[in-house]
Length: 393
Image 1 (spheres, rainbow, N blue to C red):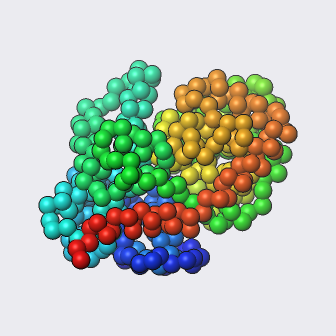
Image 2 (cartoon, one colour):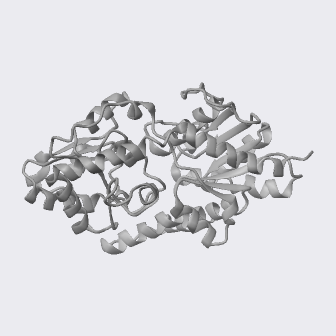
Image 3 (cartoon, helix red, strand yellow):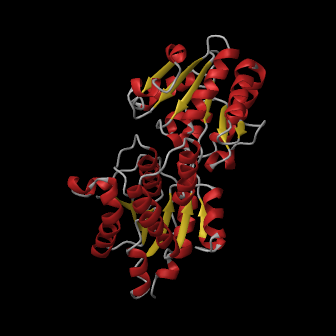
């Protein structure tokens, strides 16, 4: 896929313009978290003076886009694309550099610098998924254990080991990689994403309504079952409280079926994220507290967007939330899986107007320092640290 025009205001240029390939086995749908991050990073890099190309699952024939098939073929798609075109940096998400990485090591040095993009450490995600199955009394299907727990996790490890550098979105993932000896600390950088201008320039939420806002896919990893149980307890303590579930990617009926019937009238479900983004901002502004009770996040861009419009956030000790939120200063963190602590944190914020506003003010100051230009500067520094090592004079 060819490069796209920059959507980020031009800033200072890099010392050396680079041609960069950003690749991921996701569809190039900006309403999805991972593709949105990659597209925004690409636009910020382009504004910084680099030339950016993209490779998404959309560039694979439709018959081959099934996730199970993509595990097998997308590394080959990346390798073929990289060998046909000249790039200074090949920046590939997850395990999809499993072929081009070893090939880079076997060929004459200097063809490119290979950077692995950890959108979320799939080994940690796998551990949390197994825990969920145990707690719910279920069992992972054999096919999933073989394809993901076997093949995919090996691809991810090989991709990271064979890269010139690794970009993580949070400290949790960086620590995992270094502790397993896959890369040294010096070659593992943490680059947090930015916040879109539509959030950064918006007016702040008035925080008047007893409304809780959740943004994310309605899946177990997002802590949705803990949220349901916590909301039951909140509804007993906070009069007229409501919950908005946005971007569920499931039908409203399917999401509401997880709630007790007596609470369903208090829950609004939007299966897709409102478009244009200004409508999403308005929805956030009509709420008083944001919540993201994930078991694990590679970063969790939703919490940063909520903070940027003035919502105090209740999150869990994972991903970017663990890096950016300081409990009692700019938000609240509770242990993942802890329904009781989650409920109490929501009750405390909804019941205490002064505390809610104090945390919201600090949340805004934190979130609005995270721009895409800042991310592009950090990523450019990472590129420049490895490109000379991969260049033959």
